[in-house]
View 1: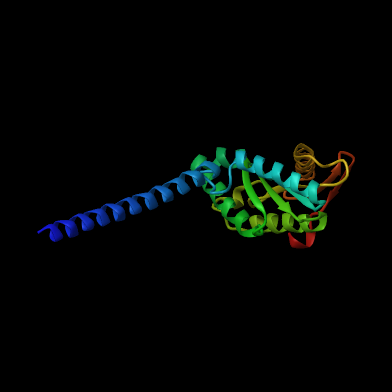
View 2 (view 1 turned 30 degrees about the horizontal axis):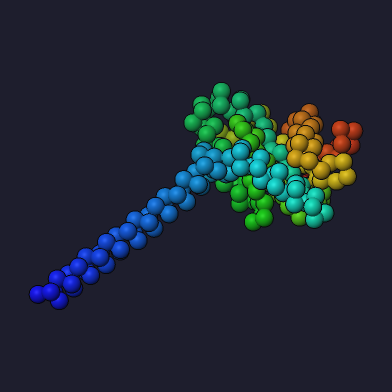
Length: 216
């Protein structure tokens, strides 16, 4: 009887251990999900502003320390207010959601794509020089222009489009705010030039339209 009681106690302990192990595993999975939710934008599935900001600061430090290339793309969805006003916010949300998928697909594994706010996005591109960054920007811009979004033909340009500003770390451009400032100026220049364009900004006085006309 004592042996049976001991065996029963051992089985009970094993059952408790198995239950605890399973609960710990479930808790670990939940924690991972919560961590992921904390750094993701709910609508697009891309990284959120806070994560993008922290990642950019870390990549700038790394590039400066090891003297590596680093580029930043600032991406703005053209005429988005017009789209929302014309077709409703749900249709606008659908465009942002699809745009997140297109940008993720076009970016490389080493890139970080984040929703910066509203219809603005950034792509952090480590180990990437001016030419490579502009090619990446053009790839994203072209994929979005070619995609069959609902109501796209009702947009002012006849399709959904992006204005993309590109900046690269260089002498005198070695802080996150430097890159953001130049890339933002490049976006403004792209919009001034008619939108659906890629502009590279070396400085306020040195901007270059990198749009490949043969792709349009």
